[in-house]
Image (cartoon, rainbow, N blue to C red; front, side, top):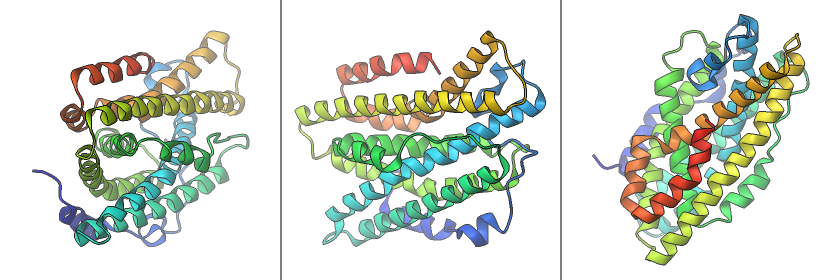
Length: 305
C-alpha cells in the first residue's frame, strides 16, 4: 500500500508524545546498563574488552547516537518546512502533515539535547561531539532538493530498522535510553511515509539531466557524512581509551578505532542504503549507470563497515 499524507497525520496523532510526561518522567540514565545494543555497536568484534569496558564502549557510542540524530534533525526540519511551501495554497492535508513533521523534529532536537545533558552527568569529562549542527545543515541544504530528500528518507528508514532489529529486542539497555528511541521511532514511522511522498514528488519534476546532477549531489552528501563519521569515530575512540581505566597495546587500540568507525559507517550509511524499502524507492528513480555510480562511491564505505 502506498503511503499517504492522511495516513501520516493519523499516525502522528496516535503516537504523539511529550518529552517530560511520557519519556523522561523524572528519571536518569542507568549507567550500570548499556546504551547502544551490540548489533549496532559491533562490540562482538572486541573480545578482549571486559564487561565494564564493553558497557562503557556502548555508552560512548550511545551518546554519539543521540547527538547524531540531533545533528541531522537540524536540517531535516527546515527541509520539510521548505517543502511545505508547495502545499500552502493547495493540498491542506499534505500541508498539515509537513507542519506536524517539522514540529516533531524540533521536539526531537530538544529531547536529544536532554540526552546529552543526562549523559554528561554520569560520564567522565572529555567527551566531545565535533560536527557543528548549523554548519552541517548549511552544507546539506545547499545541495539539490532531490539529494537532500533522498538522504532524509535514508536516515528515517534506518531509524526504524535499528529500532526494530536491535534496540527493541535488547533487554539489557538503560531503560530511559531505550524509551527515548522507542518514542523517537514511533514518530519517525510517519516521517518515513512523508519522506517517500516528498522525494517522489520532487523526482517527478526533474529532467534526465537534472536527475543526473542530483545523483552527484547525493554521492557528495554520503561522502560528507562519512567524513563526519571518521572525525567523530576518532574522537570517540580517543575518549574511550582515555577514560576506560587501563592501557591497551597498539594492536588493541587500533582495533578499537577500526571497530568504532565500522560501527558508525554501518549505523549511519550502510544500514540505510541496504534497507529494502530505500533500495526499492531509489531503484525506481535512477538508471543503471547512475546506480553503478552510487554503488562505486559506497563500495569503500561498505567495505569498511
